[in-house]
Image (cartoon, rainbow, N blue to C red; front, side):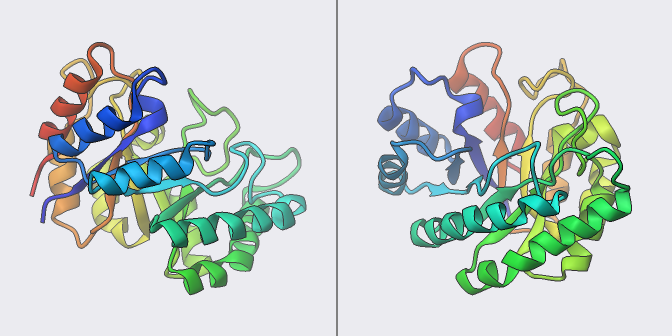
Length: 259
């Protein structure tokens, strides 16, 4: 099957673009979904317009924040409360997954203790996510360039967290851009770890710009590899276009329209 593609609105689309015509154009290109980060006042307007143009809201952040996450046990109660509200909203609006964060490394905490804390925190909320049918996708980010100190900066660490939590609703947001920077070997990792992946993000490396011949990843091959797996969720484009936004999105869609 062909992959289902999504557009990360806050990254790709300038705030000045009118929502109605933008979603209409995104749908006409063939995209199946859009996604957001934090919920804004216009959230329910977005949901209604997305439905009007047959678009799913693929994902949004489930809790604050990137730096203060599951690896800190002192944050578990807060994160759980925030995720309960987000899970309820996701279930109501048919959003399949929420983005979760490990948090930044803490002084004096070992990798093993950070993993144990992350597992413990996710186990607290996983049963509710299972009950509501919403995925909790722990995001993998690079700590080399964009997010210094971030804990979940390698796929092996995130996969082990998912294995230990052992919930069908706890998975990874495998950001191809970030993992290329940290470890490479993208296609092999996807093929071997697809059962633990609940969402993908794309962008060109280096720079997080268009997926063109100025960057190092072969997204046609990567998306063909994803399409060859049982994965049936979304691949979200999260890049900053250098030029015309809609032309960049059309090129990205065509490049990744594999099956």
